[in-house]
Length: 326
Image 1 (cartoon, helix red, strand yellow):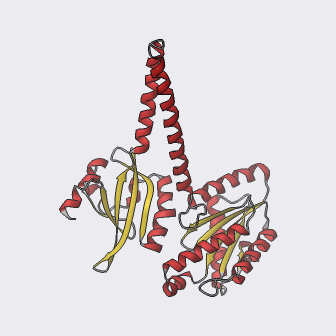
Image 2 (cartoon, rainbow, N blue to C red):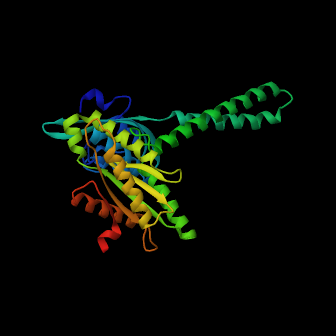
Image 3 (spheres, one colour):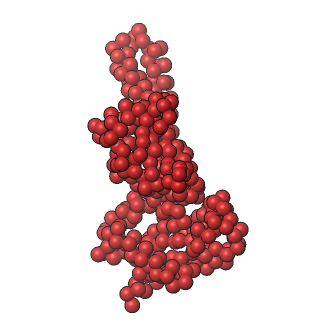
């Protein structure tokens, strides 16, 4: 690593395409309390919580693979004491002697923490001011106004961060993390009502060929347009999300096997009959309807198996997992 990068005013970490740490600068190591040997040859996810691993999988990897670049990813990493340190991460992929390397710049996100500290400080000042309210009435009013302003700013920051953590930047759909949360909620509701629901995985056929022939920008346009098609064909109660790459996932409440197959076929036809910049675009679809024996993992696995069957049977088709059991 260049000597200047070692002591840059921000963290700098290099990882392989598989996520293995190969280098880190002194700034990052000092902040996190690690020695270089603590991290080298270990997976970057080894210093992430489960929630942040999910963010990393649903945002970082798809964008690096599609664009070779990730910008402004909000993520927390665990220091040597296990405490979360918030960072804004920017990453870029490049090849060195035929080996793919991803360089990550990590800037600690202290603004939100500073707001919280200022808010606590302002509240403490209020408590002190009450003891001297006759002499400090003007000061107390100023502090109240400052607290309201800080609270409004903090609420806005939290709102933005929550939205960013649940939204796919390219398509504007909800992301894998949000989908997983809603799937778990749907399973809880199923336990109470036993109303059927189905999970659908939609995959663009030959999407790599689109990128290779037309370029990644056109590929991004196809992803955005498909997201619009999925949204326009969905009900308000449906959950539509980008699972990663060219895969999209949907939760269809109150839809049994027959209803989900009919809905998926309508969706498949809509995509096939749409006008695309690249000519013809088709999708393969896999469906699973939740049963009492299922969990979030098994229903997704079944939908994925059904999708694989659609791919194996010439693509541009709909397969329900129950079709494979007949």
